[in-house]
Image (cartoon, rainbow, N blue to C red):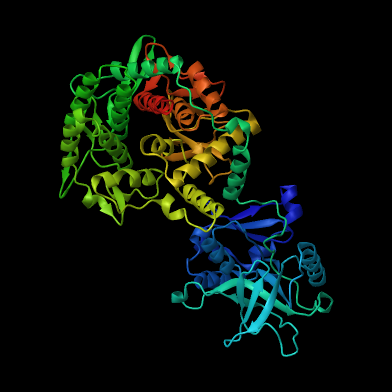
Length: 627
């Protein structure tokens, strides 16, 4: 619950008294338990430089309710030691909830007859007012027209009108010791929504006549110089700065003979792993001392990667198109469908040898991948009938709830909304007649400025968890980038390059099977933990998170390297591709799943279907761009 900043000297120097830090991070503080535990005894033991972190997602949406909760908490502590540190970069609606939670945040308004005519004069007056009042939280305004409801209507230098709640000024023109509130006209349907900042109003013909008897502001104002930065905003700023570097400047894509050889090698995996009866392929192949260890269970995600890889092989002219089309038709004909009341859907897991069901259930993310593959295949005349027949077997309307496609697990139904696949689904499912679908990315990507929209989107990403390369770049390759996808791609690329500049470590993160226990890892950037780049895997029932830089399971993903160069060709992504080309090839076998970041050593004789299928997709996309 308590994040102690005293250990960091630069933070201790800047924070001053105890502060409430509004960070929308996971696992920081449960609000209900906080209300029970925040007592005067707890706060009496805290020293300067201590930060209390609250997950703003837990605050009530209604500002009045957030204010009530904040008042209850503040009442149980020494309020003189409870200050508010708030971030101006927060999306406005979240910011209002934060401000309402901390009612002791304050600002001084100085009403002038007119503004100085130039910037130098304006800044001089502002500095005088700040000095006179002893605070930086000063806003100069003009006007001061009193309205019928007792409020003052004022205007800032930028022409923005603000309504200051009454009374504000006494009959003698002296300031009333506040706080009063900024009145807010937005959302009148929810009643009188007041701006949460505490406000002191001053009215003077000249700055020299300003009274300084108003008590000093109890809160830390927005422009207070502090070293604690919101991680989403920090990531945004770093990415913006890094994207300006010449190594990330877009370059003309190149598709050469070496890449064609890579495509041939990746296709050899699809051929060697083929099951004659079904057309499906082994999902993982590993050879040790001449012995083969193969995985014969396949998800619908991997079926989609297989079909899309085969379509890419047609485009790359790696085999006769008729032969590949026959295999795709065989695959589609072999896929089983579970009849479940009015619903009909492909199962979670089947056997590649005979397409028998290995695990019943339904995975919405994997289904979206399969749907993307089938709808793309339907654009080929030779496959149109087979695709139509397969799609005709599926009935998923009953699995939709509130615009979200549900997962079916062994014992329960689970929403797929809080996943990085949900946005990918909204791009794919309209092809099946499901146009009213919800995306956490789309719903978060709102705001008046690009910064607002981006930071809000990063909060949504953080709430979901580690963001890998897939399905982010698959949307680019298969569907073209949405606005949300384009922004996240920029931030992701900038963050990878920033990590390289800071550490010298070249990243290509994605979810990947590996050739040792725990056998499968998720990795990508992660705002919800102390380090930005993390690896996640299961250790028994426990989910482990480790920094990718130091984890023995940190992997340089082969498919991620090819996808990044295909989507964003530049010197840095070319460096990623060169690393994969140099170390990930297994001659006569396929592309290795990846390289261990420790020394960039290959997972020897270990390859998987998803990697090789996506490598083919990336190379076909790249070749298409060079035409």
